[in-house]
Length: 326
Length: 275
Image (cartoon, chains in turn purple, blue):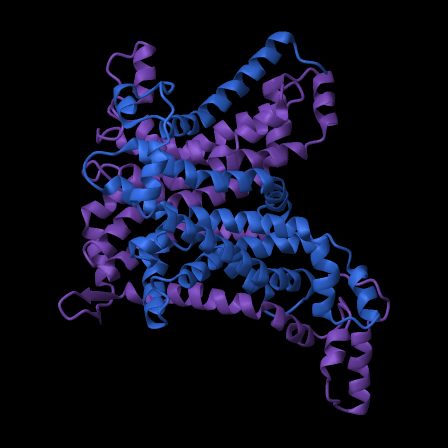
């Protein structure tokens, strides 16, 4: 906001109207009403803003809000395959879910998955961002471009490539045996390891985005702060913890929050990499919900899973919105 | 303040390790795409002895790849177009107007980031069935647009905020309508922002998998990610040669666009959408 004209014309016309009674507002006068004009009535500004927002509201209303509300309602219904209809069943889906061991298994996996993915991403991206931010780095432009490559790749392609890399006789195990590790794990087929393989791949894929965000934060740190700290005899760790981290705290928190939300809801990597297997070893909540909806035709049950996922994210999303809106 | 030589070497070494780790799977994909099946089977890691175009010939001639490639381009291109058409005025309104419900609207847009796809998919499915949008480009385009809208609106709002209001005021005093002023004065100045939105929405649509999998269920209508995931499912054995060729071709457009547009995307992300 913040117009610069001292007497906003919109307000003049507002006053005139008050004096001479209502006038028919022509299209022109609406269009000509200049910016700003903080003292202008909010209602009239709202009326002028509306046409600009209508397409967005229509699309988001139809494809986002409606399906979302629909999903919430479905979670209170059970789908009967024989008659192909939904019957209201109250909180039955949720009751069943809480007794479903597979749900709790997937829930636990999802928690491990988000916590590990996001913290590993943060640490690795932070190191990379600090390296990229250093003036001593050779070929900085080339390095900066190359490390962003995973960001641009379709997640399905990422997962496929890693299926190749992590295959039993694939490059990864060849490399490990070269290092002298006698019996490298069977990454995607060992129930003990499969979830960690998914985590590894997701971390790999998401490092670039996080790095770019953190790098932007690092670039906003005044170099003079480091110089002053160096004069006072601070070492690298001290200046990292006392200067760098406090300055980029806000960016870091927002990115971590956003990343946690995305990772929690992520479907494609696990689906292509292990499809939740072997058995259900790497089953996460989005996959659990997908299987219920499209293999067992338990749509209401799947919707209930979605609603619980949403509930898990509630705190994060509140925090994210507050940070962005300030 | 200069680093000691040892530290400098360490720094560059760390950078090199990151580059290798983040790039090597792409190198494998490329090498496998130009090697024969036999070679890949006998030596999983290795340079091609004979460079072959056989894998590419196979996916072009013996699969629906061409149709799926066309679909991906059509869906992504239309998503970019629709996103820009819809979010430019919305971002402008968010930047310039005060209106009742603005905070609520912003909250809604931001909150959609957290909506799990599974909650939405059923409602979307039924809606699309009612209006005949299943198995069509249009349905997927609208879907992807709805995903790119929240970020794009924020990104553009950030850009518009930085364009001085005085420019439009001058135009409007000269008798230019507001929509006209947006089109003629503000939009041209916001081209970097629009490029950022374009890059973002193209990549989002090109890479999106879940809804593409659920909404379009005929082979000829798949987008590339769905085609690729199906490739894996057929039979027990994965045929890595053709698969890598197809994956490579699916990656190249995204990568090229990303290289061209990343500057705008990054400045947009860091300038407003994420903060």
